Image (tube, rainbow, N blue to C red; front, side):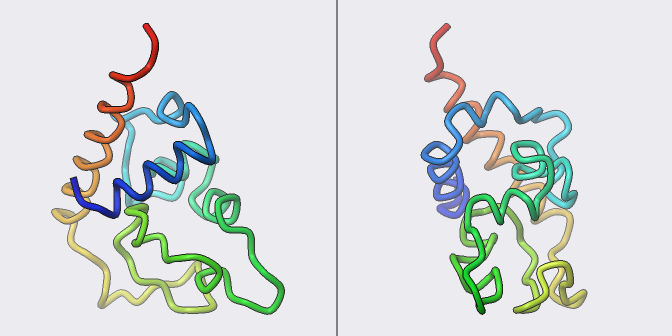
Length: 117
């Protein structure tokens, strides 16, 4: 499992206990803002990111904390100051997203094993 996903899962463990119960791995699509990890936990990728890292006055949201890629929530590199835009030439291939998805599924399965029966 890549370290970014481990960081993201540990962050969600601390901030949103039981988050794994909100994620449907069958529907998990990390290229979708509504069915990615944050989309399923918070209802939308952007709402999730703002919930985890509230903006500070005068600072673009991506400068408040680390980027979503640092926590394995995304592979795309966003333009600083405009979280809704990304550079098409930097967009990762679907194969990379599938690898990231597999890592998230692994993190979820590991956490489900720890839940009381």
